[in-house]
Structures are given as C-alpha cells and as structure tokens.
Amino acid sequence: MSLRQKQPLGLGHAVLVARNAIGDEPFAVLLGDDLYDTTGKRPAIGQLIDVFAETGKGAVAVMEVPVGQEHLYGVVSPGKRLDAARVEVASMVEKPAPGTAPSRLAVVGRYVLPASIWPILAQTRPGKGGEIQLTDALLALTQQEGMIAASLDGERHDAGDRLGYLRANLAYALRRPELRDGVRAMCEEMLARAKAWT
Image (cartoon, rainbow, N blue to C red; front, top):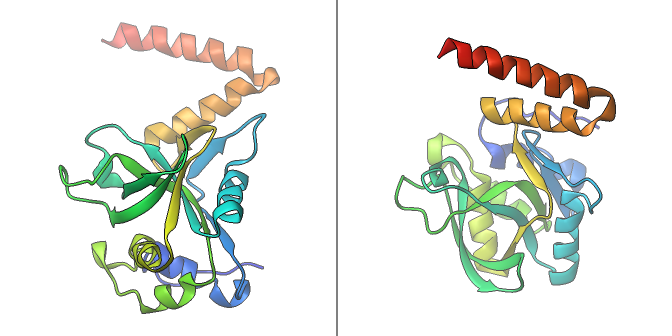
C-alpha cells in the first residue's frame, strides 16, 4: 500500500496520513534521508523495536550532534539514564533557536510509536514553520506516557544534506568489494586535482 501526503503540512501530518492504514497497532517511522549502516549488527529500526518491546514506551533514535547544529533537529532534554545507550525523555523541542537547545541529543530519523499517538497527532496544531510537527506530538506523548531516547549501534548518514549525501554514497561504495578500488582511485585523483586548484 502506498499513501501520499497531498500537502506539505509537516512530518506530523505525513505520519497522520497513515493512521487508517496502520490502525491500532504500534508502528515505525523511518525517514528516508537518514541512513544507518548497521552491517553485522541488528538493523537500526530493530534496535528501536527492542526498546519499545522492553519498555512499552515510544522510542526515538538520537545522536549527539556537534555544538551549533542543534537548531537543525528536534532536540531531547534527557531525563533518567537507563543504560549506556538509553535515556528517558524529559522534554523535547523542535529546532531550538541557536544557543537555547536543552542538550545536543538530536532526534535522527527513526521512531517506534504506540497507537496512542494518533489522537495526539490529530489535535496537534501547526508549530515551527507553520507545520504540524511530529516533535510537538511526541512531547505530548512523553508527558502522558513517557518516551525513551536511544543511541543506535551503527553509523548514521544524513542524506538530506548535500555533503552527507555524498558521504553516504562514498561510504556505501567503499564497502562493496567490486567498487572499492575504483572509488578509492577516483577519490585520490580528485583530491590531487583539488590541491592544484588552491
């Protein structure tokens, strides 16, 4: 089944479009521009499913982003630490103004959510950017039921960013034996040319 968000009204709205198709079951949200290389490990979404299964609470993937990049993400204010990779979410904010983020723990493209998010999403009003923000609904869910933020075991690539997209392509190409030597030679040639340009 394929569903289409007919108007760009935000990620929260895009998720809400799937409500009738999903029904009253827990579900996963995977953003296509966030790629996780978990070669030899449990897939990233599987790791979050484990968190949901073990805690019974919604789970979001997080990673610590560099100082100054917090305003590009939804950011979690951490609560009680559960283990090395998991923390209870105390609060969260969508794309905080520079210098105001509660932490550097950014939500990065993977969610496992209970069906109880549906009425919350349906009541969520447009927020940041005039869009229905999933982060705003997640904050309400956190306040009602709690939520877990988990650092995933794997390498994340941000294919929604131009340099991240290039990096992801190179990283995946270098993992393939039939491409590795050619890609390496191409990169070396391009670096040599780039040095000549400066």
